[in-house]
Image 1: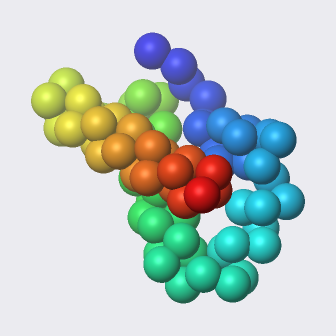
Image 2: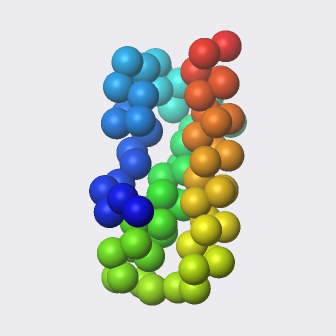
Length: 78
């Protein structure tokens, strides 16, 4: 289990400029990126016991984060 945030620009450093560009030019991408950010922060708070939760709830949030990350990556590579 990692206790470091998984920010988009850290996950895809080679696409950092495109992430910034798409956040301002594509409302759907911006919304997904914001959703990713919110879920990512919630996972980080759970992992560091700032906001403890059940193992199953934390696992569900990780799955949601992964799905959002996959969708964002596909949009970045399109």
